[in-house]
Length: 178
Image (cartoon, rainbow, N blue to C red):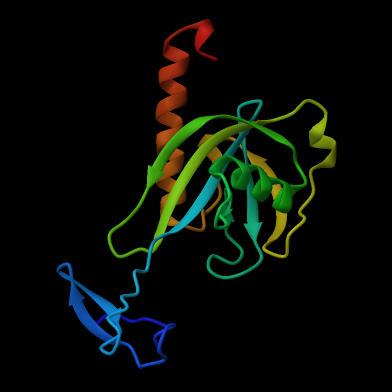
């Protein structure tokens, strides 16, 4: 059975029931035919690079309280992905960054999250403004990729692996790569 938080049809107030629609069990209204399509939640993740180190924030909330993670957050409806990434970094760190490129898209069967990961670097002079700004982050620190603390989410490790593969590929291309 699919667990859903919506109990009543938003159009006719009839209690929703689970019905198979397009081979998937979905909350549906038996009276008016409304089908609730629960889309994924889009999250931006930003890997901030500075002098060979990566910026992480210590989580002050669950899930992952006390562990470290990349700057990340939900994309608001109607917001551009890049705008959301920059907003989340500013909200969590007070840092102004330049997005370098898209690192990858990440999803997992059964998870409601679609992660969009970017590489970024701080704008010149903005590191002086670095400080935790959001209630979700208690501390900020730069770490060398070979000395990372325990990360909060399984995807953090996947994103770190992909970042390392990309950086190693860029370095092997020679001076014009970085």
